[in-house]
Length: 330
Image 1 (tube, rainbow, N blue to C red):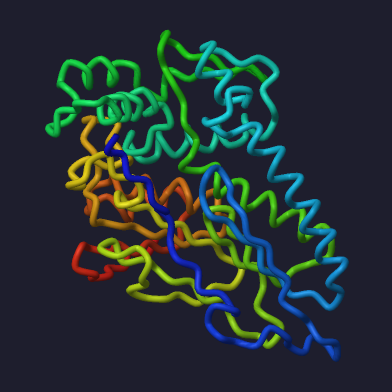
Image 2: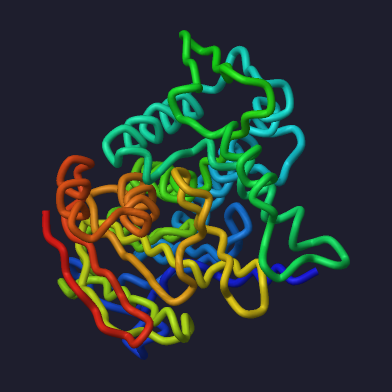
């Protein structure tokens, strides 16, 4: 088995990691940094919020984790009983959860806006690569063209039908993945729960970080953008207030030791994105940033600004294999 899975997302440089004080003044009271770390859909996740009442903060985080568990039950392709797994197995899903319909609608809209560079029905091609490279004697040249053509014949966002709360595929064998969107969506939902409990100074990262307000001293949250050649290091940092950032890079999952085949697949050709290339997107919500980072990685450079603007992104940073950062603004 040659599949090498690493964290595909960016580094977050938070207060504790940066050596900043964990206790700050907030309106005459001391605000303490309260944290949680875990996983979301297989990716490292964290919550960092400032609170003057730590017990209240812990209760809010517990409520947020209950929301996280509920949403993983909907979106996880690794759980046989999830809503998305049911759709992929049966080809239809009746009485789909409202959150499933909401994210699917956004994903299909992004597929349209990106001209198919982003397509949530790419799952059959991903599975073709996975099956190929997890056999005992995988051809290092990758899946055969015949296998790729058969998988590509099942791809096409136009083949997903939504009628009320029912979702169905147009062709047997189609499959859906919302991984490029679900982590951002969950980030936004978890942030909403924490905000409903009275907290507004936080960095929520359920695979995609979203900063709400500032720290109590008025400073911004600082987010590091990963170097594709070494994702544990940042090539630049961005100060963020009331914004989200998402990074996609082929380096996140390598199907082969040489890095010729990655988990990000162009739905139009079946070819995978280069391993040593990354795209980060800044947007008002993590849902929007998440989908756009994948879409722009697979979009020709001359169209990136057009897609970024059409889909509501604010800024994109492309990072080359040698660490050069290029900015695209909507």
